[in-house]
Length: 451
Image (cartoon, rainbow, N blue to C red; front, side):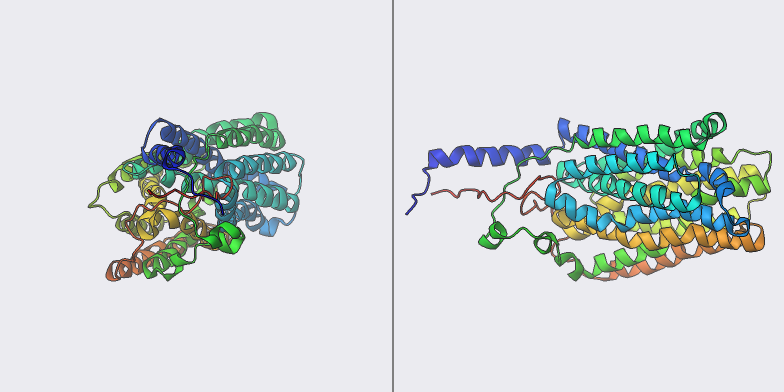
């Protein structure tokens, strides 16, 4: 019979665990380095995705069927967005299983391959595979873990950290359109894809920052003996009715979310031929970044509900999208886009804090992953549907009007969340059972109890 280790032998293990847990929850120096890396990952991934509207007119000219060119060109961008979100549950499970570092690094490499292959694709069907498929897979493997990982490094400043990290996409969205437009004119679409591949490569470099603190928790015998996907899957979040309503309402709100990002440049060319459509994307990016930091910091206050803030932002986002069709001057359209970006920043920056508030830290990773997965359908369907309406009617007025309705409906639906009783996991800062999003593998070591 094996004897139990003495208290002196146990002490280094306990001290090591205490040190790792303290480092994990301290909001300290490495945590902010992780936040900076997440900022860059968000920026590179969504800077590329959100600026598809700049590439759209060139890809539109590549479409073989000119009568449905708008639909096919929009499908390339929306398929990339849809793949990014559809694969998020898988990315979250993989990150729980193998660790955020390896998944983010692999995602960056796959994204590079997708963009390089896109540089050799001269037809829209090929771009659907390389840009829409491969880049989408790489993006989701980088994005989902880099968002969920913050809940393990931050406690008191989680909202601010999420705001800063998600502001990366706003900063890059604000900075990329004009250089991309210039590169398209000077070096063409193929070489522009290659420059974007270099940017995507930096995502893999940033993934190295997501190191894996040794969080060791009590495991029962079943935990030690099994490590399949079913054991990684957190089923308890689906018993939380407030989370279920939240995960239904947000995808509903996003049917028209990417319509302005994809079609606004073309809309400006049609309505205001002398104006610069790329500037509007930059405007949305700037105010979205400000909104992410502002509302992220606001969500750190104990009396403020991130769910309520998201609800208000959806109502405003719907009304603003409706008003795009009614904007008869370029100045008014700029104002609408500035406010739309602010609402976008509020919604995006609070995905992590809202998931953590509804499901606890342990459930947040998969809650975010499944939410993004459900968002894939509306995000994929919205831009092509708007393209079909444009092909049929010759303008985007009806498309923007229809895109503004779902966020308003979703905002009303979210009222039911506040009528339901909070679940046992809500507002609790639980440590992961094993090394989930951060750990490279599940550890079977036990925290020794005092004799």
